Length: 309
Ligand SMILES: NC(=O)c1ccc[n+]([C@@H]2O[C@H](COP(=O)([O-])OP(=O)(O)OC[C@H]3O[C@@H](n4cnc5c(N)ncnc54)[C@H](O)[C@@H]3O)[C@@H](O)[C@H]2O)c1
Image 1 (cartoon, helix red, strand yellow):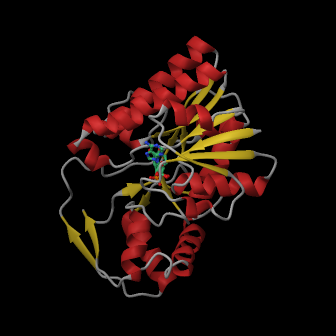
Image 2 (tube, helix red, strand yellow):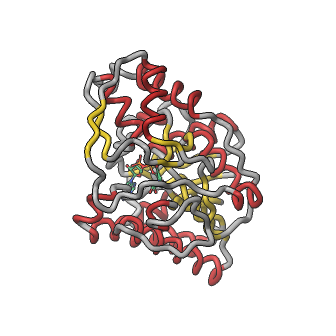
């Protein structure tokens, strides 16, 4: 199958491209403007790279030539900047996704796997979050993802597409050099000998899913005809202090932590129910946190010079 991966040079994208390449049997096209990702991240994987923007219909049409399925990952993923500049976030995430959907409609491409999010869409709810909950985004980023889920649903119903919106939980893993999410940030800070900052008492929980388990979920969704939202995580809420303790053990470093008051609006507990993903696409995350963090730490250590850490 010839597959277009938008945002394929980013964190989730580069792990997916590596997975598809390892599985074999696919022709992979990547469309990415390298605003946060970099084509160097997938230099070890067979693919065709197209430098371009998802808001540009000409670039998108060129990238979709002969393609049978699209995995749409490209987005402005920054939550706080989306609060400061909601229009920019809308233009990339919503208007850009409409270009993807419209070009698919024009070319008759029927299969879309769209990257969405659980936490940012559902808002402050008692976990586990699941697909049946009423959405109440707390940020323009969350609202943009919910809007795109709406367009995916409408295009599926109106034009006979299969459009699954996979709601990722907190993804961690190798190839996350540029990410400010907690595991990547903490590892970079530990390597620089910096003190970690925790907002809150360290008991706040998140659902940390390894990027390779997530990539397997995306591949499973591609091979199915599932439409609509599907929550992908592990189903386990892990306290932040447990992540720090594991990183202490793995790194052998004496890590200092500065605990500050909780930030306004921050959700304290969040993890998801993956029952629908298990039933609908046979999703089955396998990588335990200790193993996954060890691999991620090793990746950063091995690439330390290249990353100038
Ligand atoms: N990482 C997570 O924990 C997480 C959680 C929930 C949802 N998601 C979603 O998963 C997707 C991938 O996230 P990620 O963590 O890999 O982020 P990332 O920033 O590493 O990857 C995004 C990629 O898209 C590219 N891009 C951005 N704007 C573009 C544009 N206008 N045109 C073309 N390319 C563009 C970037 O250069 C980058 O390579 C996003 O849609 C994000 O919202 C991620």
